[in-house]
Image (cartoon, rainbow, N blue to C red; front, side, top):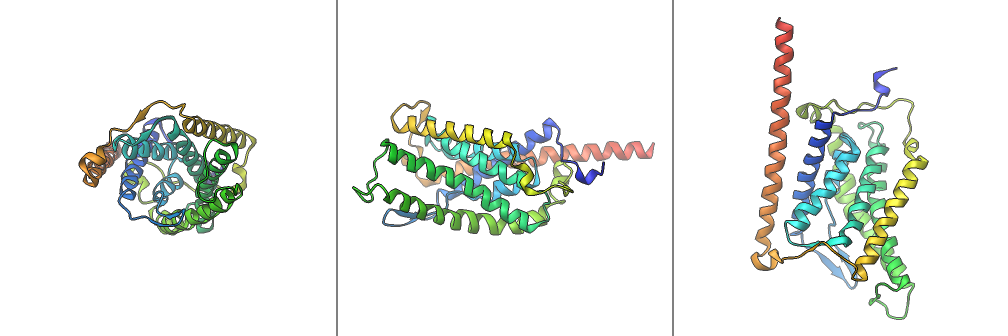
Length: 293
């Protein structure tokens, strides 16, 4: 079989490095979004939910599953736990929704040089995350778990508000901080960043289309996890919650405390790069020694 038609396989240590790299980078970026100004017009907020291009680029270039999980854990560890703003069980909803979106986006790209595939993958990935979030929010209002204060007495207004919010997120998070940077970064980084980590670049999968990932297993698994995400959010809204960690570090020390988290994520990121580059150098030296002998 042609090597170009084979899927990229990584060792367990390489998958772990991808996980830690994604965790540190996205955790750092998520902290920075905390200091980005927000604007609101009535009940509609205009803000950056997350820098989508960072985890999306990693999911496309490397192992999608480990890059997606790493990004989600990075948000929990650096932006939530370290900042003293962890909502316990309720955080599971956002974790699962983002993980599904990023994972599917990474699977969709069969050729990292194909800008059309990248564009579709980015919009689908962010769209899944935002769509699942909107469905859960609408369900909470219709079921009666959460009250809608925007337009009292008009239940259908939640559809309008969530629709506007969805479009807003797709434009800001999906296009401005997702599509455009990812389209620029992926083709330029492909084949250049992977060797630094001792990983072979992903090759174009021949005789394979984007729709090949839509398998019954993926659909059933995604629906199951989406259901778990919704239930966890419903339980949180009904005060059936646990694991909450809110010591109010930001209230005590101010926004400057965020830079402690950024520094911690930066140290981990640098450590991963140094470790992997040293590992690659040692491997190259051994190969050169074998050739010399």
